[in-house]
Length: 187
Image 1: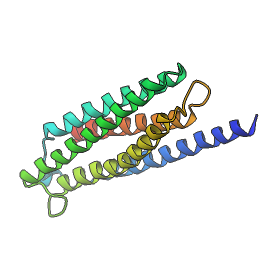
Image 2 (image 1 turned 180 degrees about the vertical axis):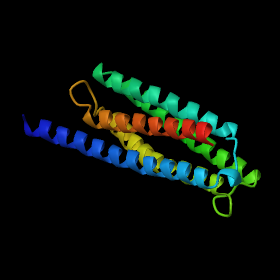
Image 3 (image 1 turned 90 degrees about the vertical axis):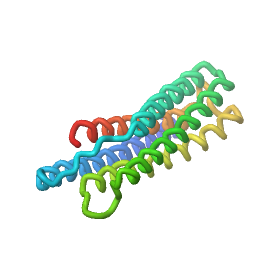
Image 4 (image 1 turned 120 degrees about the horizontal axis):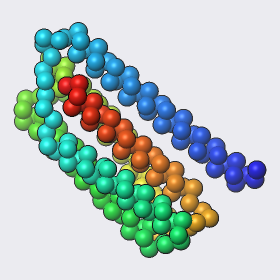
């Protein structure tokens, strides 16, 4: 195995360890949610998620599709399409941010706040804001990958950075789907 292959393998492993850590974080948070709901059964405030959270879900799923198209384009040496698909991915990520913010705004308008005596709404904020912070990291990685794509860095022989960025982006989309379905089912 060459040095380059060893470095790529190490990067793959580091990404997997990072994603596992994030999974454990959200597993702990959602477990705490279930325990708290059980302890406060009659006092638990059932909160209907705003349509804005549904729209943000559509955005992150769509962005994942375009990220995958960018990766596929690199395997065909289609430099123009790589950049275009990454740009659409980033645009949809910013729409995700906007809809998440509007979702929090709708919670505030319904008198559901991060702090106070409403444990249910506090958990919604903690789960969604924690995910939001991870998405910021994912978007920064996508922006970096996009800038590198403009100089035709990625092709069928060299797409490791793009692959890792897209893999992490898919992972963030999966985490959001998990949280979204969790909040719909268990709330």
